[in-house]
Structures are given as structure tokens and as C-alpha cells.
Image (cartoon, rainbow, N blue to C red):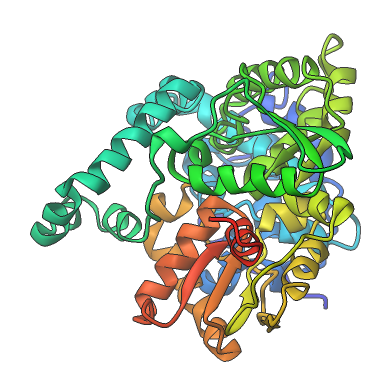
Length: 448
């Protein structure tokens, strides 16, 4: 499909051609060569969720690539003309899969975000404070999780819901607080540094990446992940000096912060002598699988990053490799599956979750139309661009309705909350539930 290049609305036609000279232009150095790979064919357009809902060229992959190229050449201003189109990109990278010439859109996107962040350092003091002072520290994230558990258990949450105080502060925050799963008691959370033995014959020693948001708010899913690994014969160690993967930092243009976090994780996991490094979050796993790209120009870390990348696996891959799982219960109702974009498009994992779901006794698995298109969670995209996110989500939920599913499964914390929000918006939370793949498998294995 050869779609014509539309006018890019945000660029004045009279724009001078030398706002930023090539010499010393970091965007030129970082991304210009990659932008030249794009042949502007338009095969990416049907794959792009923001192009579909916004209907303009500057919201498409090839439009954004063209904008980055023009900014690198000094033909447009980075802050005035490039920042908004780049910020409105979900970063789902479905365009990379659709591209016939393998344009590295992810690299172009992250380069643009890095340069934009350098030019707008005070754009969001609160966001930068959270990313630099909270997410990189596991103990602080666990405190946050414990406080949220206390908030849910103490009755404060009931008061907040009744007074609708959160709705007055932020509608997006109120919506996602409403669909947050019940947080498990902190006393059940596995401690960092713990080794969990395999049940039966030990097939492999693996290390578990807890993640920051998952460790704080989805600690039950983390615990069940470890129990499933133990059940199929894996000895599991939780490296005690691991930290945030750095994905949110990379997506916000904080590349140096992401590199620093990557180096700490590489050191932490190298020290435990494990065959695989397991994660259960598609977004985290995508960056873990790209540490080699993140550190490719660092002589000291490049080779170590490659080895780390090769050892990084999604939980579904390992459950298939060392399975089958010893199921004990039959499943009632129709199950459907929404792909995590970063699990499918970046890690290339899409058959394993489906294979596991189909293997559950009694499971009636229905393929979700458009399951490979983004749900518009996008890290914190659904908080920063709530209305645009909801347009994409509402369309997604129409497809969910077609499956007649009573269980919607996904494999990433952000996607999980987004799909649960979609179920709530449809008014069918009494009939349909949104759950993580691990939770479904654990329930079918009789683990609670």
C-alpha cells in the first residue's frame, strides 16, 4: 500500500532552513542516518494507532520520521515543531514490524526524545523528580506499595471513592486508581536476595527481575510467577541489588539515567550465575532485551550487555520451554488475549502466551481481533494524554466485546490497568475481568 504523504500540519511552510545548523546538532548525529532509511511508502500507516485516531500525517510513523529528519537538517525547530508529535507517539513500535525496509523507528524515537528532553529540562519537575528519586530505588518503591496496601485495607479508599476527591484532582488518576488490583500483604512479598528451590528435579537456575511497579503494586503476580517457575523445576533467585529497568527513563528521553540503571542490573544479575533472567512485564522486558543497543558504544559494558540480553526471557517463554504446567482446575468461560506491544513487537514473543492459555483444561480461547494493535497504555501515555488514549482503548473494547470473553489476559502492568479501565468504561466489570497471564495460569494450577 503506497499512501501519499500528507501535509504535516504543525510545520509552517515559510519556516527558514537554518534554525539549527547540522554542525553540533545532536539530533543529526543520533538519528539522521536512520531517518534516511525510510522510503515514505506508507506501509506503517495502518499499524499506527495514533494515525488511525488522529488522522494526520504528523501523528504517523513516516510523518514523525520526516519531522525528525527536517529537525536534524535544521529546517524546523525541535521544541516548537517536533516535541508535540513525538510526545503523542505511543512508542508501540508496530510500525517496525510493518516496515518493509526495517527502519529502526524505536532508535529514531528515543533519539528525538533524548534531544527534546535536553532542550526542555524543566518541562516537568514532578515527573523528573519521581523518575530520578523514586523508581530507581527498590526500597522506596516497596514503601510506596506498602502504603498503597494500607490505603486499600484501612478504609481510606472507601472514603476517597465516596467523596470523589480524586476525580476533582485528576480524572485519569481516579480512573486508574479505581481499577488497581488489590495489593497483597507486604508480608507475603519475597525478599530481595531470596533463593526459592525447585519442586522436584531442578532443571535450571533462573534469576527473577521484580520490576519497580510490579514489585510495588502487583506483588501477588510476582509471587505467583516465582511459584510457577518453581513448579516446573526452576530454582529461582531474586538478585538483591537489582533496580528499575530504566524503560520509563528511556521513553522520557533520560537516556543517561537509563544507562546507569542498566549497568547496575547487569552487575546484579551477572553475580548470581543463572541460566535465564526472567521478567513478567512486557515493557520492562523490552528494554532488558535492548541493553545491548543502549550500551553498544560503551567499550566497558557492550559485551556484558550482549550476554545479559541473550539471557533475558519473558516468563511465558520459560514456562513453555520447561513445561507443561501441572494444571488442576478447569477454566470456565471464554478467554481472550491482548498482546503487550513491547512483548510482541520488540521481544518477538506472541505465540507462547497463546499456547499456554490454550493448554488450560476447559479453556475456550478466542483470538481478539486487532490484538496486535496497541491498547494505548504506553507507559504513562494514558496519564499524559488521557483523551487520545481513551479513543484508542474504546475501539479496542469493541473488539473485546466481539469475542464474548469473560477473561481478558495481558502480560504487562500498564496494559493490565488499561484493559481493566476499558472493562470499567464498558460497564461490564461484573461479567468480565482483566488479569495477568501469570494469575490465570496460577489459578488453573491451584495456586493462590
